[in-house]
Length: 187
Image 1: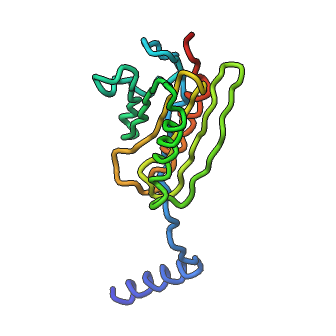
Image 2: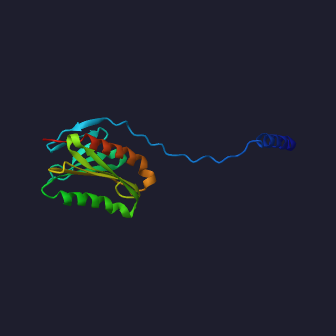
Image 3: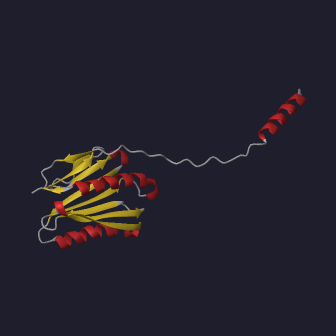
């Protein structure tokens, strides 16, 4: 009986010797998000824009009439939208918006600035793409340079880890750009 087991083990050993053992490749998390469908936001504010149906519009602060949050609950993120009336303070508003982005320089690997201009609709501004472990991955401001000023920024409700949040940050960055491109001032 013992010789029979030895023959089986040797046979199995010879049979398996030709295969090269390879380590199992690392698996990558596959994240998928719904294809964006945009709808117009109707509000009493002096602006309109389109938002992703995937987000939920919420009033931000009770005493700030035109401040809103777009909540992305499944992504654990919020796009904060703040409106200011321009009253001979455009320079201060621009400086504050730029300083908000510069606060992330400490943790950011880089900040890409993209000017935005839609002369037909009198919408001008800047889009900021922040890379690295910064608290906010994307920010913008828009103005007509005379009456209206709008600021937006995305924050995640998790500790920033750029590699982990990158797919969600890219998805939200595209939504933010769509918001900017669809924004219109009410007359």
